[in-house]
Amino acid sequence: MARRRGIMSDRFKEEIAKELGFYETVQKEGWGAIRSRDAGNMVKRAIEKAQQQMSE
Figure 1 (spheres, rainbow, N blue to C red):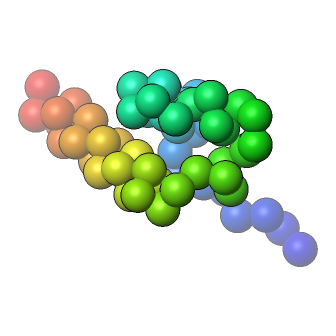
Figure 2: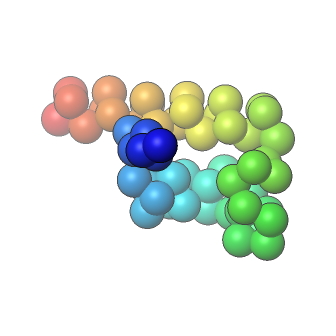
């Protein structure tokens, strides 16, 4: 079964996780260990960055 490729690159996700302060959890336990709230905030921040980039 083919694995679905994510929309955000790992590098971009790591950058956002660092900004939001939970990258250490990702390093220690993986993406599955982050809280739902953190995942939601990560998506929100990614959208904000995309909108900002489009307006420039």
